[in-house]
Length: 402
Ligand code: FES
Image 1: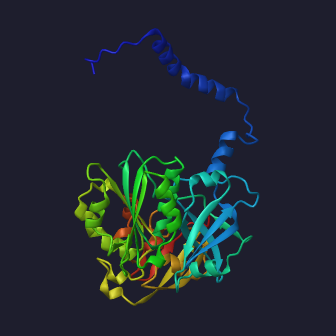
Image 2: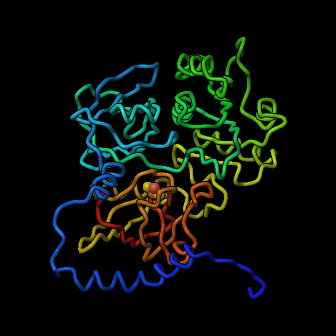
Image 3: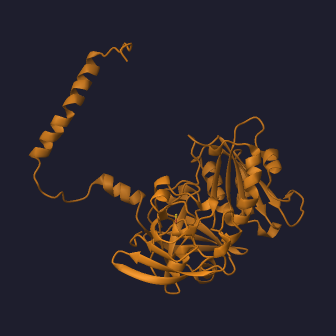
C-alpha cells in the first residue's frame, strides 16, 4: 500500500472532506427532526409496490384454445399496466380447490412489452389426473377473477452469466418460457440469439407452431427446430433431444449456454447428454415443470419408505394439526389437502417460499430439486414442496402470506 502513489486534486479533497462530515451532518438532522411518526406515502415506495406487489388481482380477458391446451390472457380489472417481468418468469396462481387453497405456477408466454400494455398470457396444458390443470381448463371463463403472485423465478437470460447464444431445449408445456424469450428478442427487449430445439411426441402435439415460425421468419436472432419422437415427418428432426442434436445446431465457432425447460422424464434423459457436452456449470440453466411422481425411482431413495403412510404434525404460529401423508407425495400436498393454508410459489424447490423447519423426522429430497442454502440444510429447514416424508414428521410452517 505504501508504494501507491495516488494524487488527489482539490475537488477530490473537498469530496473526501464532505464524506468525512457526512455522519455528523446526518446526526444533526436526526436530532433536529420531530419525534413524530412519518405520515403519507413516498413515490419510491409506491413505485416499488407497483413493480413488486405481494399479489395481483387479475381477470380472464380472453381464452385461446390450442389442441389440448388453452392460452389465458389476463388483465387487471381496471385494465391498467401490469408489473414488468423478465422473459422466462412465471406467475403463481392461488386457487381454492376442494376446500383447499393450493398454488400452481405457470410460465408467462407473452412478451414483457405486453405487461406495460396491461396484459399477461399463460398457457395451461391438459394433465389427466392432475389436481388443478384440468379444472382450470374446464372451468375458467372470460370475466373470472384470479389471484396471482407478481412474476417470479430465475429462468431468464442474464448477460453477465450466459453466453450471447442460447440453445433452448423445450419439452411439452416447457415451450412457454421460450416463447416469451423469442417474443422479447423480436421486440428488442432481450439481446441474445436463441436456437430452440423443441421436442414433442407427434406433430399435433407441437404448441405455438404458427407463432414460433412467424418469429423465426422475421427475427434473425431466433431459430426453431421441431423434434418428434413418435413419428417421422419432412422438415422435422426425428428422435429425442440428445448431445448429438445439440452439437448439430449449436454454433460451432461461438460459446453458448444451454437452457432446459421440460418435464421430469426429459430432464432425467438429458442430464447425461448435457454432461457429455462438457459445458462449464454456469452455461447450463434449467427449469423443472414439476416434482417427481415416483420418488422411489430417484437415486438415494430409502427403499424401506416406499409405499408407506405417515403422519405430519404441522405447527403454524399458535395453531397445530396432525395430517396423514403418503410417502409418494410431497409434504406440501399433504398439508394443502388437509385445508391448511401454506405459502408456496414455484413448487419445485427453487423459490424458498415454502421454507419450513423440520423439528422431527426425516424426508427425501430428489437431487434435481435440492436447492436449499447450506445454512438451511445445516439448521434443519426443508422445502415441503419437493420433500417426501420417510417417517412421521413434526414441521413448523410459515404463516400464510402472499
Ligand atoms: S414453493 Fe418454491 S421452494 Fe417450495
